[in-house]
Structures are given as structure tokens and as C-alpha cells.
Image 1 (cartoon, rainbow, N blue to C red):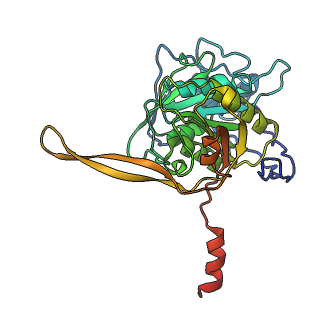
Image 2: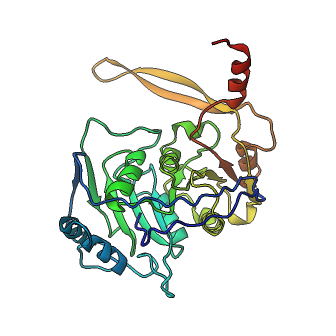
Image 3: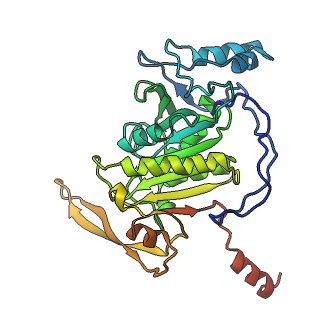
Length: 351
């Protein structure tokens, strides 16, 4: 999102921590995005509510260098009347650069969940929000190809935080945030807090988790957060406490640049939450049914229904943890190769 220097961050050498997640060594600098604009079909909109971002001295110097038109474009992008706070614009009191944190979701930019996520991580870095302009639940890893995408400034939604709504999917939001809003990779991407569970097989369908996966594909460590409560009036208080703890841990101890954590919170009061449990994904699925009905014109339509069924009796799964009032944390990955089967096939199949 808006990194202020291009120096590679030196990560700790390969160690295995208490979480069972393997730390890796990565000294590769993240590439700075240029100010080039291609035939993407993306339209920026401005309005009276637009706030703009105050450019840092480093960004201004970068914008001014090289191609002059790029510098003018960078300045125009940030033009506005309201300055962001120090905590949110990437500079700490001692002048040290704070990490840039991209926040997105699949419930839409107006959802209570994303507001609570932003509040939970304020002060930990420069927070920038790019989220869908409407609910996008169940979109999975869908991207927009045949239609225009629009970005609309929504800086009034979150106090002191740069925010944009996107007409596309959660994955579109991440892509646009990196390429057009931040013009470089953020230090961390957070998605959520989702209204409803994303444990077990839900990770496949979830727009919340797909946004996190997309970030990891771009070498941006990411975390998806979900609360097992679909209500608009859900209590996100307990979740906010653990969101901050988890984000602080990830920022303090960088793991892998492709890190993806799927975090789910039980819908219980804070005093009933037993703590955080590192889990594996449970084997479970939906037993579905399509209810057939007729519309007022006597034309048939179908309504998807069903129930979630857990076939996994393990005590190390996300479903078990949530049923026993733990916060579940499942490390996931976008490499879907079945390495066990691959090894077997290499021995039995002849080329």
C-alpha cells in the first residue's frame, strides 16, 4: 500500500515457532509500482466527500523524480483538503516508518465488521481501506473481466483513514489497491471481520478468504477474520481484542511472505473465550438442497438451502476449537498440489 522506502526487510532465519508455522528467510525487496496507467478500464471517481492523502516527503521526492508527468499524476492523486493523522499516514512520532496495512472484506465497506477491524488495528500502521461497494459473500476468488471497475473515495466512513469503495469483487479490491491506490505492496493485508463462519470448507467459497489468498499470491502476508454470527448487530468486541493480538504477533515476528491465516471467532462473550488455538481445517461440507418454487409469472426458480455437517471428529480442527470457545487459527495456502498423491503417482504411473 504506501510504503515509504524500498529497502528490503530482513526476516528472521528459518525457525519453527510455538504456532507450528515455519519461518523462512526472505531478503528480496518488494518492487515499487510505477505510476503507469494502462488500458485497464478502471475509472476513478471523485466527490465532495473525497479526502485525499497527504504525501510524505519521500513520496513527493519519488514522484518528482524521473518522468515529470508521473510526478504530477502522483500529486494529483493525493490532492485533498484533509490530512490523515500521524498514526495512519505511515509516520510514527520518532520518524520511523510504520507498516502499511490494507483492509478489505466481502460484506461491503459499510458493514460493521470492517469498521471493527479498522478500529482494532489503528495505531499499528498506516491503514488504508479498499472494500466492495456492496455485499460480495460467496464470491470466492472471482475477478471482474468483462465489466468496468470503479473506485470511489469514501474517506468519510472511517475517521482519519483513507478509504475507497470498489464496484468489483473482494479479489478485485486487493488487485486495485496494490496497483492503483497504493501503487506498491503493503506490509500486510487484513480481510473481514466477516459476518458468519469461514471455518472448514467455507474457505473455498469465502470472498473474505479469497481476498487474503490473493494478497498472499502477490507476496503480501495476509489474515482473514470471521465471526460466527451473521447478525448486523453482532458483538465484535471480543473479536477486536484478539484481532489486535494476532496482528501484533505477525508484525513483530514476520513469517513467510505468502502467509495466510484463516481466523475464526466464536460468538460468545469475552470471558468465555478460552484463548487461541492453532488448528487444521476440519473435513466438513454442506448437505444441500434446492427448493423449487414458482414466481408470480408461474416460472420456476430455485433457492439453495442446506445444513453444515462436520464429518471430522478430530480435536485439532477449527470446528472443534470453535465449538469449545477457542479462537481458531488455520494456516492455509494457495498451492493446491496433493504432494502425497503426487509421490504415489510418480512411482506407479509410467511415462
